[in-house]
Length: 387
Image 1 (cartoon, rainbow, N blue to C red):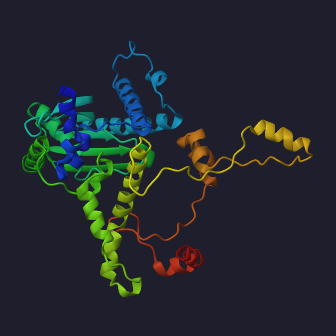
Image 2 (cartoon, one colour):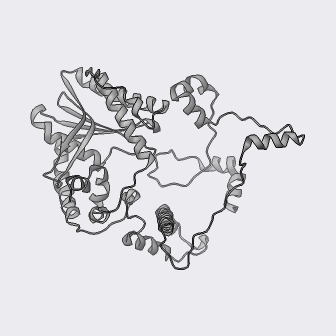
Image 3 (cartoon, helix red, strand yellow):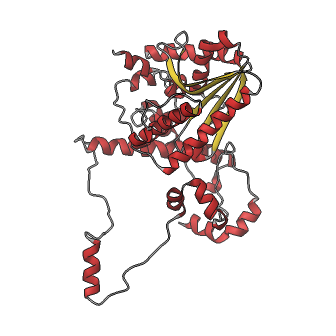
């Protein structure tokens, strides 16, 4: 086994999964990581952020060409998002520097091998000063990520502590998730001593099980990015057990029973979708699934050549064949850039009240007045329920 594979097996980015489901590490080990345009875009954003931070810190970058020229996914949105991230990091650096000397380490490589076999990773930005350590992690994706009890972020912090604690006499650790595209900054500050018991009692045993391919498979939110999520028997059993529930007409179910079903509904729907996508991918490779076949899906008609269509229609005497529409809000914001969009069009943008949606209590949105909502959306709700 190559060193790169050993290091990747228990990567910090997958810690949420292998800490909760240790066997998943070995089960996913030999499955190809196909990557995605989203991952590549995130990598580009990190590259640009690193470059900007180094420039801000006064590093001599004269020997380095402007990295923007080599980014596949560079855009005005990426420029603004990385500016927001850099501004946050520089703000934290300035805050610590007010009370004395402060040091910033960019893309700091850290190790925590005494707790995780071959455990290592790179912290996007590490700032130390005034007995405090700040670990910043840029997330460029759309999925909201929180800093509270985040295994990846805690492993970075642990590695940073092991490397720098004896030098800087660190007392507190501030861990930060920065998601500029979602306007989400999530932070949590802990006493440094809380990380060592977590590493010893939670991480170390889970890592040992994961490395050896032992332990019990367990389903949860960590399944989302698991490579075997579509074929995992444990996940299938959990969802099939839900499917066996004796669904009766809603009036015959107690409210507690309905809540129990709602608790699992998203997991069930996501599992079904994962299995369907996996089956289609395999079927396109020639794998046969009993009672199923690959057919051509539905499609919408389209013009083969719009210029020729226009000529033909106008030659037939039809002239009113064009319509003009202003760009949608998302496309317009991308064209102008978030800051310019806000300055130029902010006063012309309105956000109507959203339709009532039933969600878990853990959702951060404020609960609405149901009586008012029923009055405001009565017709829409009736139509939605009927359909």
